Image 1: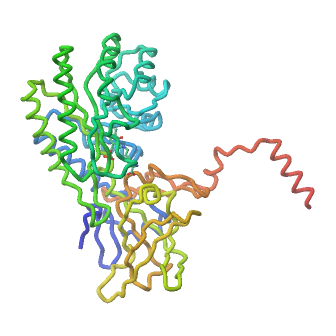
Image 2: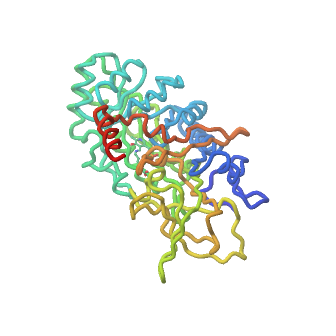
Image 3: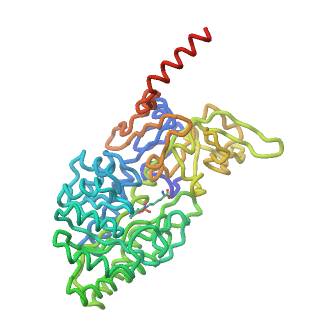
Amino acid sequence: MSFPYYPNSAKYNTLGHLELGGYDTVELAERFATPLYVLDEQTIRETAREYKLALDEFYPNNLPIFASKALSLQAVFAILQQEGFGLDVVSAGELYTAQSINFPAHKIYLHGNNKSRAELEMACDLKETRIIIDNFSDLEILKQINKPVSVLIRLTPGVECHTHDYIKTGQFDSKFGFDPQHLELALEEIKQNSNIKLLGLHAHIGSQIFETTPFEDTARILLKKYQEIKQKHGLELEELNLGGGIGIHYTLQDDPPAIRTVIKGLTNTIKSLLAEFNLKEPKLIVEPGRSLVGRAGVTLYKLGASKQIPQGKSYLSVDGGMADNPRPITYQAKYSAQLANRLVSEKDKLQNFTIAGRYCESGDILIESLQLPENTNKQDLLAVFGTGAYNYAMSSNYNRVPKPAMVLVGGGEAEIVLQRETLEDLLRNDVLPSRLLKASLEHKEAIH
Ligand code: LLP
């Protein structure tokens, strides 16, 4: 039995244990402790190839780039570089991570609605790194830096995509990108600065999107601008960046489109618009994040305390929660989970449990209602699926709990790609001024 939220390599072995990348998750939990993020290399590579194959078939002049905010780790960048992907970065930290593995600079795109001068300088110094201009402040700083740079302009296309309000970005009142009414002004500023080369326009409308038409509507809006720019400025833009946003299965209720279907529909629309507007074919860039790494991640938790409310809920607590997966408390995101150490059979009597995190917030509930065998207990290991994107990336040290480790399974290996934090790590940047140390020592002496 397989579910659409499983990583590609997931299966239950003869012991009734969940296996990922050929590794028994019970053994992984013993070897690396819990909570543990497990990342399936096969899923990342196969999904990357789904993108690449569809793009190469329908629109060979393409560059898919990984929206690295979904999971910024050297190992992930390296895998995607090997699969021919570029990178979307939004901070000096992500850029530094890319540099640390010598990621090709011309395949890196720097985003952000409030880039610092230092970040823009860092990107300019890499020479070929592209910058997505989000607002007039970016332009002003680039003019001051005054180094040769290739840019795209981000527009808010005013396209509705039906997703959670916090992850919509294409609407006109978004904090991201230029309002189309200001495009002309931005173009004039760029024209006046010979160091800034305009390559194209960008739009990203939102995330966890299940429809295909919003992507096509966005392409139409942007290419209409390409036509206007050609007519008015005699400039044929070389690149077209349509952002990311394709959704994934977290539960059986989710209904994401196949990657190939979106790419086919989108590229058909683009090709007919290019013919209609008589435009030169630009390089097509897409920026998937979640759909590349989301399903590749599984988090393993040990079950702990339980609590039965008389005539009410049955709580089961896990050894992690909102600090390693802030999506349920932030977006009311739903997740699927199963016991990793025993395959539930028809003989098991099932019961509804509320899976609670260990953090000091009533809202720290990972799964509101999960069917598990009624004798589920502290010996059991829970696997939560679909945790590869925006989990570690958004994790925190809330309650001063060290962050979990991440293990990459693939190529016949199970290797740490993220060390588990230690208690010493938590104190690394914590500074106690000497006068306070002295005072606390004196206080201790006084008590004794
Ligand atoms: N390009 C840009 C400019 C973006 O802002 C994003 C995501 C992407 C691409 C990738 O979108 P994706 O393919 O992953 O949907 N933390 C939220 C998601 C925030 C998305 C931010 N931008 C969550 O956990 O649902």
